[in-house]
Amino acid sequence: MAGTRKSGIRPELAILCLLIIAVPLIGWQVYRKVTLQFTEIMTALTSHPCTVQVLDGSEYDLTGLGRSKEACNNGDSTQCLDYHVHRDDNDFYLNVCKNVMRKPAQCVDLFGGERSVHSSIGYQTADGVCYYMGQLRSGRWSLLDSRRPEAGLKLTYTGGSQCDGDTQRSTEYRFECNPEAGKGEPVAVFGDCDFVVTWETALACPVKQAGLFTFLFWAFVILAAYLFGGFLYNVRFRHIEADSDAIPHIHYLRWFFGLASAISQQMCESLGDRIPFVSAAWGWLQDKAGGGYEAIATTFGQDGSVAKPPGSKASGGTGILDRQGYDQL
Image (cartoon, rainbow, N blue to C red; front, top):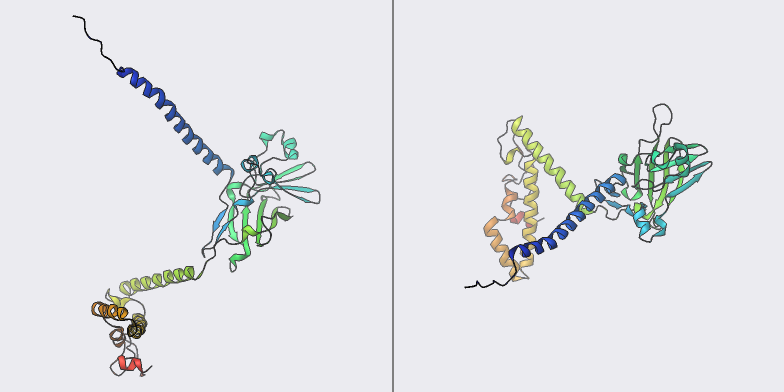
């Protein structure tokens, strides 16, 4: 009896079809990842971050000042040429946060080919000379005026061509904040070994400036560090028991927080007379945490004098002892 022939797709053919589809897809993904990593590596070698955040919280973004071949290829014609400044018999070719895109013809002729010319953030050329103005990896940011972050920024490069003796050429960009200047361009180049490039630009103005919140944050950090350090000192060297009494100036802190609690209690009670919900909420909070008057009373003597830490002299005076005394202020 002849056997019946089974219908359907053979397993090996199905696996082959999956491989035909999967292998190109996997290869494409691997190619994309490798290309992306290579691009990131090359970017890191040919540029450095052009965004800056200083200690007070002010932030700057000067990315728009750097010129690149990629931006030129995307249709922005202003990006196709390096910055150029002429001074007497010297020509300076510059870029920001990136190496100069096109190596000057004088340098190529002098060093015997483009490959013999090292990359640099700037070149100084004249009759028969070509000097490197600094190395990209040496870039360092700082403020023009540490007391006025809104004045602008400095960007310093070192490691340029040899100058006098052991001195190497360096370049310092001075980006002055001018909200009406747009991107701007380098105005002038000063110096022979330590170059200074002046530049007015709106991009040197802080895009985010430190405000009251930043000031309060750092004030809190400094205060906390002082209290914690003082606590450790009192416990370690003054042999005070490790409790709240070892905190520096604890009697003043108790008085301050007690006074703040009493004032907030008085305000909430006054507000509670007008809004029943606030009155009920404040009553619940008092049951859980207690009132501020008691906290103040603990820092004063029964005669109303301020309680002093052990070893200090007592002094007379009128203080806040109870609610009646507080209401009389």
